[in-house]
Length: 108
Image (cartoon, rainbow, N blue to C red; front, side, top):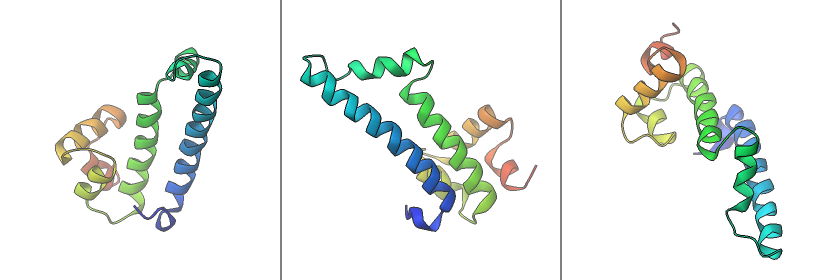
């Protein structure tokens, strides 16, 4: 994906990169102190979140933006967001937003 072509995606990517950088830095400190490499991830749980929840948040933002602001096909959007097929993506949109991806695209 060429992020420069999608300004909104740059903001989401930058936020996600900051989260990853924070946890990568934390992992090196924990490792240097003799802890396990997975130890920093407990902080996510302590803050009431998880890697999957962060990933879903990013996917939700990008899904809405792609569907409303681009001419990409639903199939291309599903692929960019990591879904194996459009039916899984559409079901996920229904769960997240109460609308299918095609309904969001149509502006409902």
